[in-house]
Every structure is written in C-alpha cells, then in structure tokens.
Length: 125
Image (cartoon, rainbow, N blue to C red; front, side):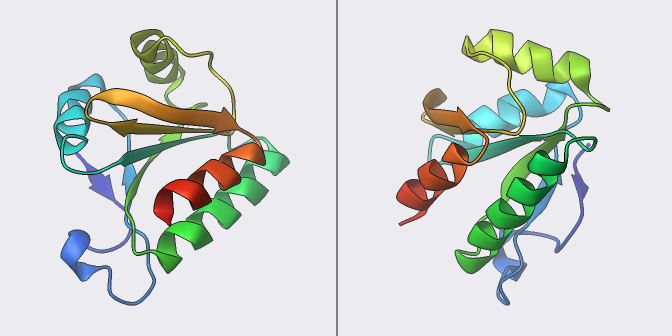
C-alpha cells in the first residue's frame, strides 16, 4: 500500500509540489521497476537523525518540485531491513542520504550526500 504525502496522482503536480511516495515494503518494488520502463524512478534514502540528510532532502525536494517530478522516499531508520534489501538487490553500497535513479529496471545513477544533487540536476534537465 502506498502512502502519499502530497497530491493524489502525478497529474495533480501542477503548482510546484513534488509527489513523495513513502517506500515502506518490498511489495512496492515490482511496481517501482515497472514504472522505470517508461521514465526514470528516483529513490531518496533519508535518515531522520542526520542533519545533513535533512538539509539535502530539502534541496532535493525543491529540485523535484521545480520539475514537477515524483519520487520515492525511504526512511532508513524506520525501514532499515528494506533499505538493506534494496542495496543488496541493486548491488550498491548503502549510504545516507542517498539518491538512486532507476531506468529500465536498472540503476543508471546513484550517489550520496551533496553529490546526489548534481546527479539529480543532470537527469532532470
């Protein structure tokens, strides 16, 4: 079950508000991969205890709102097992904050900390 913080679907993102979908269970994984066939899918791994992660999440969210782009938000403290499982599935090292971009069911980019904002800019342009 998806929990949506803002808006009801991608068509409602008309005033600069990004749609954040909370990634909370493995059952969402296939839906996420299926979505990546047509467009890039963004996963932001966030630690609610980390000040740097919060700052970067705010900047990332602003970039996404400017482009009216939805993304998946994974709270790694509340969903540590899922976060580790995704890292294993994608064969990438877990970091936080971390951005993972998937297209065609494959990782096309990932990075952490402030570097992830540059990846995001290049993909959104």
